[in-house]
Length: 110
Image (cartoon, rainbow, N blue to C red; front, top):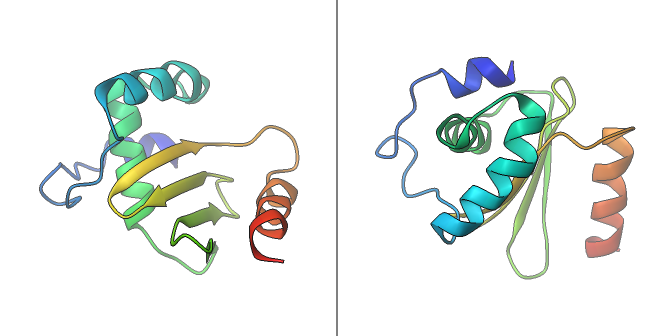
């Protein structure tokens, strides 16, 4: 599913202005998380954009007090954090990814 999102062809125009805050941050995240997903930097950015813009019944999200949106997909276990049009991170948590999402939510909501 992740590779399919990366290849879905959603470009910068269709994705709005969703980007990392800088090229350096994109390169850093792509090197860490993109490699884990088997994606290069361009594919990683496309997969993140596609994931953030997608919606289905298996996706969960919440807003932090500062307006940052956290998104999790139960089927693919993808996790993203986006603030406005700035992608903060995108990855698949190691271990129990649902617990990771719920623990993150507990830190910021309760």
